[in-house]
Amino acid sequence: MIRRRTLVTSALPYVNNVPHLGNIVGSVLSADCYARYCRARGDEVLFIGGTDEYGTATETKAREDGCECAELCDRYHVVHRDTYTWFDIAFDAFGRTPTARHTEICHSVFEDLSANGHIQEKTIEQPYSPALGKFLADRYLVGTCPKCGASDARGDQCDACGGLTSPAELRDLRCRETGCIPEFRSTKHLYLDLPRLTPALSSLHGRNGPEGGWSANAMNITQAWMRTGLNARCITRDLTWGVPVPRIGFEGKVFYVWFDAPLGYVSITAVARPDCWRDWWCGEGARDVELVQFMGKDNVLFHTVLSPAAMLGTGRPWTVPSGVSATEHLTFEGDKFSKSKAVGMTGPEARSSGIPADVWRYYLISIRPEHGDSDFRWADMVLRVNSELVANLGNLVNRVMHLSQRYFHLAKVPEFLDAPPLSDDETTAIETLCQKVDEKTGTYRRAMDGRGLREGLRMVMSLSADTNKFLQSTSPWAVHKRDPIAATYLVAVALSAVRIIKEIARPFMPNFARTVSSQMGEEPERSAEFPHDVSLRQARFTGGHALGPPPVAIFQTLAL
Ligand code: ZN
Image 1 (cartoon, rainbow, N blue to C red):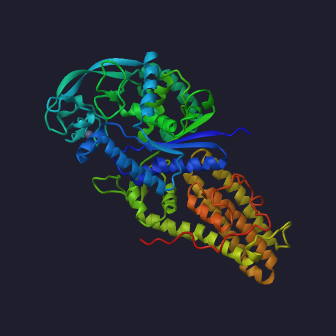
Image 2: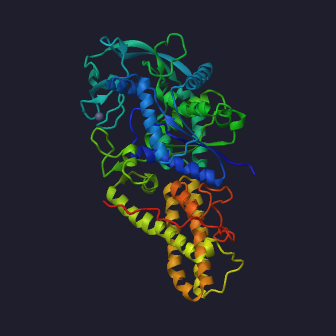
Image 3: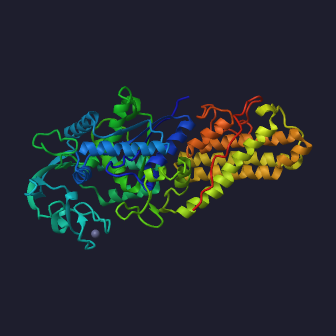
């Protein structure tokens, strides 16, 4: 059988900030759940993440903190890495953009684009600060927004109204740092000829969008850009912290982050897997690779339009996105996450809360802004953890493991070649549970194949509720008094259901799955011989299988 090869990426977070819960659920956690699902499905998976480190925002932040850019990036890269490790994000490689490999790959893409005539040189008028002796990047400028009148709009974007701006249209333009009024001077920049690449892009969207099941927002945002018509887009900036532009006359300029950052996925792979990175990204070996990318909706343009345009323009067989999954926004108690206004919660804060990573993962995926914005609420989290994780899933596992320990002789699963004589109600209950397993694992697989993570998680909890219902209706503890063999059989059926439930829960709550596996006397990590489409009967342990030591409760009640 040919294994599917799935390359999963999560949008590279910008390095100058500590990631908050919205960032985490939007890309990193979603991508991790999907990558884990694909591994369980039997795919060969490569899951890539890292930090996006070049650009103005780093320069500005480094100046504020009084350190070098490289030093700042080193510090924050570690914060990101440690946060994701704590959240149990299983990257195959987690890297960063400032590497020699990254420069080399950016240069090679640029050289190909140049050779194919997709790069234009333009002379533009750009704000220049005589005081600082340099051209000012858009973000270094402030002025009055022409759209909403806010007095502190940046040269690239107005935070007040969310509109995109350009320095030329801001009133009362001044330098953010010195406050002085910039002069406009002529300077040369390089542009990617997007109009020329539009037909190739459109055909990519027409093919991969529907086939790859792009999320509706990814499709809509992409089509809106394409309908408006693409203009040539500047790919260079007057900065020092970036990938230098390898062209005479462009000394002192670097590539704009949107050009280099998406190539970070490639360079991070190349650094981590120097021998085989091409088999994932470029060339013969990469033809069968399905690239599935996770991001917040603000990053769609870069992943579906700008970066594929550059890749297609090289004329080389670069891997382009098959699947795109973009989330809407997560708010925190009704407000936008904002560090300056102290709204929201960061990954390190979640880590120091004392609440286990699995519980965060559960709640965040259950409110993942998949089809619309959603809101993080403490009260809701407490309620959901107590009523769902503790009362439904945790309770089920606890009951089934305790009953198994009690009824199975020496905690070994008994051999049942045939079902013992059972009442009609018991037989019906088993039949119903078998059907629920088939139906819900089927829905689960279809949802997860299409990155419907919330629906996948819902099926886990729903099957857990069904199994609780099965236990309640058959009451093996009551049956045990008159017919221990029938009671033991009923518990063995519930144990098989829990075995399936922990495997379909594994992408969302890996530690839960490990713990239950240990309680069942299995390897903590999933065994490859246990696919997601097993029936309840196939999930039975063979007779004589020894359970682990007596179990302890997995989830704890939360208090507000
Ligand atoms: Zn505005």
